[in-house]
Length: 255
Image (tube, rainbow, N blue to C red):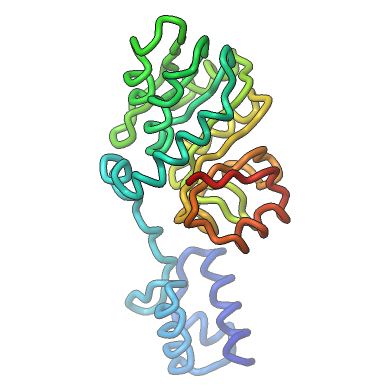
C-alpha cells in the first residue's frame, strides 16, 4: 500500500472513531509500527491529526478570537462593506440582522434609512439603532444571552424568528467557501442564520476578503442560497469567480 493511500485510510478511520492506536493501524494496514509512526508524523505536520501516546486523535479546531478583538480586525474593510450593504436596503423594508462584528458596524449605516423594521438577536445592533430615528423600529429577539458575542440564541430565539417574514437578511459568517458554502464556528450562531434565511426573500452575506475560501465547522447554507455577497477590494477575483460557479448569485466589491 502506497503512503498516500495509507494516509487516506488513517484519516478515514480517525474521522470514524475519533481516535485510534498505532498497533491497530499497523494491523489494519499490514505494515510495521515504524511505518505507522512515520505516517502519523507526516499527518501531524500537515495539521490533520494530533499524536498521543500509543496512537492519534483528531486535532482540536482552532478557537475563534474574542468578539471585542474581531470588531477591530480589518475595521476599515468592514466599514466599507457596511456602507455598500446598506445601499442594498430600501426605505420601509423589514430586515433580519444576526450578531457579528461586521453587522455590528452595519447598524449605524442602517440608522440612516427611513422606515426600516430591524429584527435582530444582536444587542450591539439594537443598542446602536435605539433612538437614532423615530421612524425605525428595532425588535430584539428574546432568548439566552451569549457569553462572548453580545446576542441572544436558543429555542426561544428561533421560535421568534419564525413569527416574521423579512424582505432581506443581512448576515455575517465566519467563512464562505465554493465547496462548503457559508459556515460558522458555533452551532447556535449557524442556527440563527439558517432560520433568518428561511424567513427572508433576499439573502445578503457580509464577508471581508479574509473570510473567502475559508470553511469553519458548522454549515449555514450552500452558495446557491446566497443572493449577494458584499466583500472588499482585497478579495481574490479567481475565488469570487469560483463562488459564482458554485451558485452564488452576485458579488459586490466595496471600496
